[in-house]
Image 1: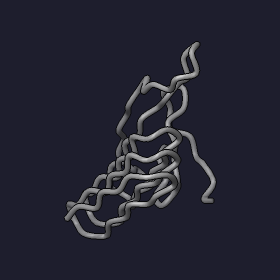
Image 2: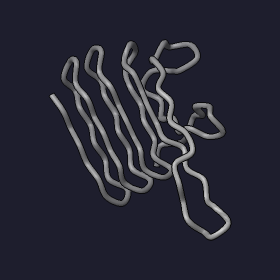
Image 3: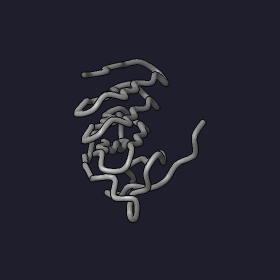
Amino acid sequence: SASTNTGYRSTATNTGDYSASTNTGYRSTASVSGNESFAIATGYQGKVKGALGCWIACAEWAEDDNGNWHPVGFKAVRVDGKKIKADTWYRLEKGKFIEVKEE
């Protein structure tokens, strides 16, 4: 199954096995809890979370000298329960996943 969303602070969530949850909006979220699923956020300050064994992927953005925002990186990682905790929100900053608070 798939869940896709776009828009300011929007949320895409999926619970099915082998599913995908994607979001492209500013400060939006994507989360998955089904087995072997993907949570993907590509918007500025997007965040992702997944259950143990799922994959999370996120884009990183930076502002140029003219005040325009551009994607500068994208990374995916498997939720292993050690380096990347299950059911925990993450954002990509400086090429690394960092924990972020739930808002």
